Image (cartoon, rainbow over all chains, first blue to last red; front, top):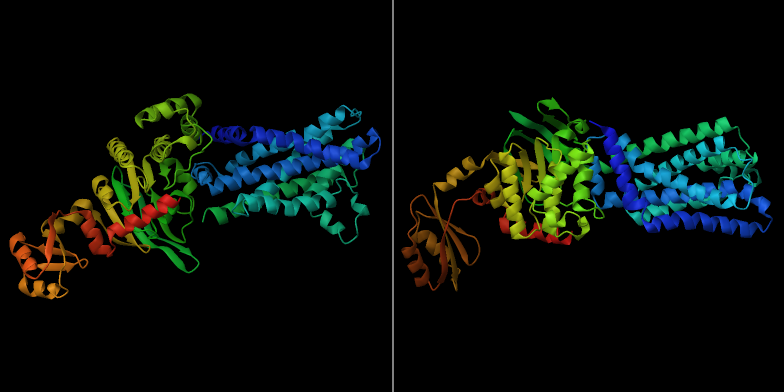
Length: 245
Length: 323
């Protein structure tokens, strides 16, 4: 059986049915644009601030973009029973879920580049270490997508997925060092920061954009990979337990 | 040769047994029907056989190989048509079929050829590029069946294939299923339309409350009632005491009072209508209708399960229309 055909078909179907639909394209553009504008207005400083804000804006764009889409592509399809068609196909569940999530990963990566492209008009990005930034962006997109998958398979309704997503997303804005350094957080909140995957992704991006990382890149990448793997396999276990009853 | 063997298959949800140790086999090339009311365990059984539910215990064998807890490995052998059409509303009929074929690893050219052929076979050429969401219920059902057979599986599972669709579409679907079976596809069918099962199936199993209460060929099941003569009388203005009087006046007949107005008369001999009508009218009743009941699977189903078939249909259609 040629599994890659099934993988590709699922990915293309999701792209056409969901990700490339005008509302999602506009969401993918407007949302990062709004974040960028908001933080620049708030900082009120010179354009030199762009580089310090960019890692946070890029990371948050990925987080919101990916987690929002999974609620649609997975929870909605489960609710409408079309997900059962995929479960009935003779492809391993791991591959099926990778196909379902690849679209969101690509969407997340594209979202990250909206603020980066905007920033290129106002700031000098020649000092950015792209060999670190690009893998970090991809890995943040993968982790956020798998977080979205974990949320999507833990609920039954699309609105529950959106609400449950916010339970993770909003604390992450403040706790992951995106805009506020972790060492300036109240001491009792700091442990919470270190159990959130975005902390490590944001740290890599701070390192890549302005050498402002607190931890070693190796440990950041390793921890992100661990989060990715754990979230993916917990989600698969939940699908087997909750959806294949 | 058995294509599917099921042994003591059980599904528990907490303490509730949805399916309670069912055993049966489906032979290559036959149409096997699983009949029962709502909540009898038909869909749960199909789900366990196709990989949408884990059995609590028991065995599922395809081509004599145990796939109980690894149904994934057998999914290429089966096509599944669920009771609700579950294709993608935003894709066209052709795109849906092509997508379903891709899930089984078929290449682009092969996918397109098969999709076009099925669209033609199922009479959906004009709606080929129309979105699935815009299809009528009957068209949706046909396309869902087409999607179930696009990879040419040796076995097709159909869960209530004609529920909630118009008579013409249902008839067309039955014809298509019969044709598919003639071409070699083994069919496992669940339905609450007993006459549909009688027309399509070679063998049937009656399932009630998770248990199979009867399993046999349609021919063998009907045989005992074929040897009997049955009449159904509809009377109005009947005295309540007419029942007792009829029983004592016609001791050689088996009388069953279905309601205040309906009496079922059964005999090994030809039932003579005249004396019965005269007797009922002498007792003050008015005979509105007297008709012969031809032996059917429905008779057997009612006898074995004690479930009134019309009530079962109404309940299913009510649930179907609320979906």
